[in-house]
Structures are given as C-alpha cells and as structure tokens.
Image 1 (cartoon, rainbow, N blue to C red):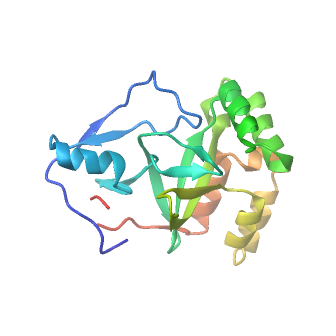
Image 2 (image 1 turned 180 degrees about the vertical axis):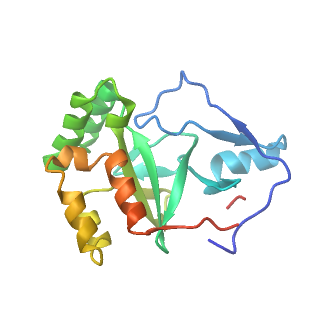
Length: 200
C-alpha cells in the first residue's frame, strides 16, 4: 500500500444524503475534487483515501457474504501488515430483516448481533461492530469483509495472553462483538499500524 498513493491538490469532504439508507449505514463520507474524471475515480475505483492522519475506505465494492455495504467512505485503521479494520453499524429492524434474508445472521454470531441490536436499539454504540479486510478484489471486483468474532480475536491475541483474558472477561458474546469493547483491546496489543503517506 505504501507505494500506491496518488496525491490530490484539492479534496473536499461532503456528507452524503442522509435519506439514502444502506444495510450497514456507517459509510457517511464522500469526497470530491471538482474534477469530474477524478471524482469518478474517487466514487467507483479508489480503495482508500487519506485525509490528514485519517484513512477512509471506499465501501462501494465491499461485501459481507453477498450483501453490499453501499456507497460512501467510512474511517478505517490499518491492522497489522496486511489487514484493515473499520466500524460499521446495523440498522436495527431493517438490518435484521435484510441480513436474515441474506443468510448473514445465523448461529451464535447471528444471535449475538441480533441480541446486541435488541438490547441497545436506541444506542448507536450497541449497533457498531468491527469488520476486517484482509484480501484483495475477487474476479468480480468485490472485496470481502469479515465481521470480527471470537475466533479472529483468538488468533490476534495469540501473543497477548493477558489481553485475551481481558477480552473473555466479558461473558456476553454479544457484547464482546461491540466495537467499543474490542478496539481498546486491539490498541493495547499495539496491532494498529501508523498510516502511511492521499488516495489509493
């Protein structure tokens, strides 16, 4: 990623239309330059935009199973050498219905997500979970994202037994999925890497 950045002279941050709802409804940023050709690249082709010290990943081509995250950018962090983490949220009843139809909410993980939504339906924090990107595009140009779960945390905490114990000190699996709980533990483990130097 370090050698694939393209600098932009002008980068305008715009809030997208709040009337446009997506299943995950966390991609709330759009970027323009005033140049139609460049703006088209930003909308459809760019993968990551860096503004100041913050990275934003383009959600347009991100999928979870076969469900798309929708248009717009969302803040992201580099996780280790080969992955990125971003936080997105489920839209309570709309998300439950669509995700269930898509087969995304099943088993213990699905029950945990639904439980988190039901427990904190009026709280944004109780709908925010972490997703990991660790692979490139498939042959259709889509990029798979995975919801961070216990099994992935076990692998990342392999050399941090104390933090693994801290993670599992929360007995509720649904609460362990929440970004507000997971991110501080990942930070303590030093797994977030510094952002390199504007658009990829």
